[in-house]
Structures are given as structure tokens and as C-alpha cells.
Length: 274
Ligand SMILES: [Zn+2]
Ligand SMILES: [Zn+2]
Image (cartoon, rainbow, N blue to C red):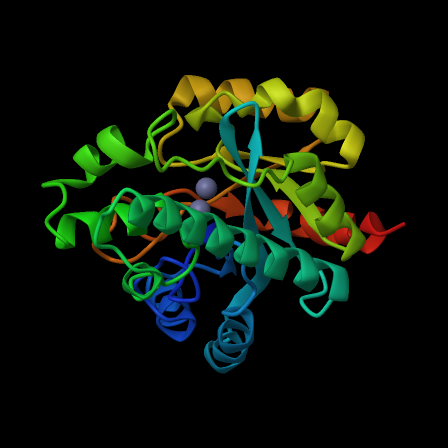
């Protein structure tokens, strides 16, 4: 049986429900040859994951999934095999975190200005990774201001509503460059979720090296289409399950790639920075 790698995995370092060590153990028990830990906007889970990988004799690739925005669309850029201690990359991730907190604080300020009983402490208390509108919405539900998250968006937090604050925008090309600078391989994540391939020309110009083809929510037609796109632009066709925990939609290992893809990522990482 060919070695299988799941290259898109979240842990408790972002919004996954299993620790890096638990995910590594699960991958081992499933017979996977390796995984990439790709938490949202953080590399905090990598040390634990890499240590567990050594114990379990499983390949663990350092990774990250950076959230960016382009033309009102949320675009995710995966990064692989970068230097996890690269100062610029760490500064970028820290900046993103601060911008998110500032945005939430501004929303809370506006809600309080409307006389609503929400505090920043209340909101921040529920944030595990990236602070965002859902956390503010939850606080509004808990305060009894609205009866659902949906209503919170409709009345206050949605675009054009009184407490709406746009995201500080971080372009996908910036994420691509930050990953390249840290010696890593930038990959466009799950393009099929929002036709993100529209941005390929600028992403290629910025240094994109891969595109996620194998993905649980990509149809067979989409996979064929993105595989072709990858071939025509000389991009590495990656894949992974976007695992978030055992109770999440897609079990670990539901989308995998072969060893060949991992070797291609390693080769790309070797000349990435140059
Ligand atoms: Zn994503
Ligand atoms: Zn993901």
C-alpha cells in the first residue's frame, strides 16, 4: 500500500479539538505515513507535533494556514516546510492576531455606544484562536440582546449594520510572500470553496507554488479541474482533510496525497527562499 499523507490538519493550537500529540497518535493509528499541522494563523502547535512525531515515528510537516482577504472573499493560504522561527513570519502572524482583536474591540465599542450590555472581556473570554464576529455574536446572545447568532449578524454585525467593522485586509499575495521569505512552500487552500483560482495570476506572480486539489468538499470534477490547473502552471497538487477533530465533518485521512507530493514540497522548499 502506498504511503498516505494528510497535509491539512488543525489542532487545539487553533480551532481543532485534539492536541497536536493526539492528532499525531490518531494519524499513526490510521496507518498514515504523515501529516502536516496547518493551524490557522499560528505555528504554536508545531513544537508539540514535531516532538510527538519523533516518538511515534510519523512524518510531521510544519505548516500553517493563513487567512487573507481579496475582493470580499476569504482566501486561505497554506504554507509548508518554512522556518517556524523566521522573525518576519512570526511578526506577520502576530500582527494578524492584533488586528483581529482591534476589530473585535471596535465592534464592542460600537455596541456599547448603542447602549448594549457587552464587554470586551466577555467576548475575549470565548476566543480560542482568531477573535472574530462570531465571538461578539455569542456575547450578544448570552446577554439576551438577540436570540441567535444569526440575529446578531442581521441586527448589528453584518455588513452595513451599526456595529459592522470591516476586517483589516491582508492580501493573499502578502501571505504567499511571507511564506516564501521564511523558506516555505505557499499553497492555495481549497480553491473549490469559493473559486479562489480567480486570483491565480497575482498569486503566481507573488510566488505561489501549489494548489490544494484533494479536499473533502471538492467534487471529482473539481479535483480533475484543479489537477489540470496545477499541471498547466507547474504547481504542486496538494491535499488534506482539513481535520478539526473527531466530531468534525471530515475524519482525519479523508483526503490524502502520496509520498511523491511530499518530496515535491521538500524540493520546492529547498529553493523557495532564493
Ligand atoms: Zn481553510
Ligand atoms: Zn483548514
